[in-house]
Length: 149
Image (cartoon, rainbow, N blue to C red; front, side, top):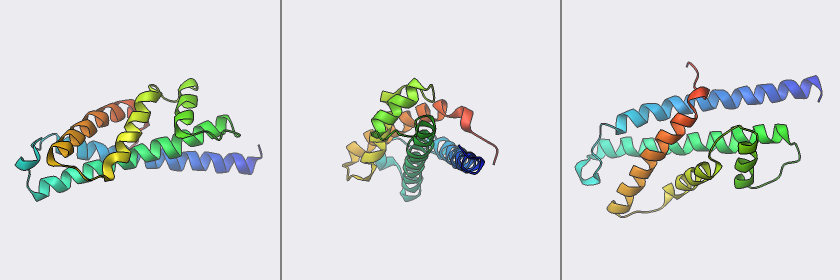
């Protein structure tokens, strides 16, 4: 690998780590805010619903940055010819010890993907509860990536 390419890869990794750190801090902030809100939708006003929506968007952003940017980058650095699906990438990353619980991460990604669907109030409450649970998992798994602002 040439020095120029090596520097490019180091810069790209640093960029992803910086994005990841910011996304973690933003999700932590929203996670702490929603912890104080009512769990039943009917008990929330418009302002609270906006906080829940922001929380869901921040969750999706963090999962995207980590899985589709950072982890995929690290796998490609280890195996430049890698061309697999996200599931393949997560399994490869688990073998490389970049992450634990590849199946759980895949489920987290799928939860992020269903965010755009329309819901009844009961379905939305279950979705938000699942999102809150998975956010605790994500934040715990990524605590080593957090950096100062």
